[in-house]
Amino acid sequence: MRNILEFPEVLRLIEDRSAAFRAAIASASDLDVQVPTCPGWTLRELAQHLGDGRRRQAAIVAAGPGAQPPAKTDPKGAPTAPRDREALDAWLAESTELMLDAMREAGPDRGCWTWWGRSQAPETSGAVARHQIQEIAVHTYDAQLAQGTEQPLPADVAVEGVDEFLTTVAATTVPWPFKPATIDLHATEGRSWRLTLNAFGVRCDDLTADAEPGDMVMRGAASELVLYFYARVPLDDLETIGDPEPMKLLADWDPNA
Image (cartoon, rainbow, N blue to C red; front, side, top):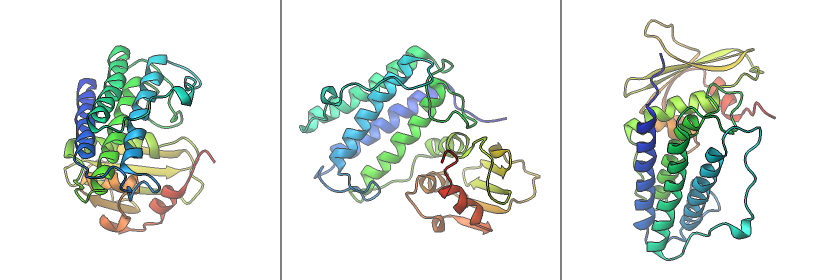
């Protein structure tokens, strides 16, 4: 049975990572420094992206179910991240709170538009909230990395992040166009998952203790797994056994192309 966090804990982790992001921005000596893992962006632009994105997610959740996301507002009317440090911190905090307010109002089970209709994740505000933890956590890592102060994702965030990525981003009902394969992923924190890639698509399940090893086995701290998923660290940072080709193909495959 899947170990999915309760909704209040999901919201708490969003608040926690949002505070960590704000702290990384506040501690930066220069907001015009480039972010290595977000080519072409400065720290200031990353902050603008985080604030804009949380406000956009607030509108999506508040709109409820729909075949399309709510129309974007006129870009000229969109709030710009303040240049003043204190005002920027307040703007980022407000952006997060707008999203959290919308999520609290909706609750975890109300439908809303998502981009992952063919994955294992439900199209609900609760699933959107789960994904937002990772959006903010990975960009917090980006902001820290730009200053040489990068830290691993907290264990509770990262273990949740592995499961969320595999069920939301990796899983799909689009038929796998390559040789069928299984990929096992083991987090050193004690959780394990199996990806099954075949003509029915890509599916994630918890890996049972008595299962035979998959075609490829990946092992590492949950933070390393999440950062690999989001192309922040190379596959070489993880312990791997077996044929790495299925994972490389999966990383490059766009099932909606």
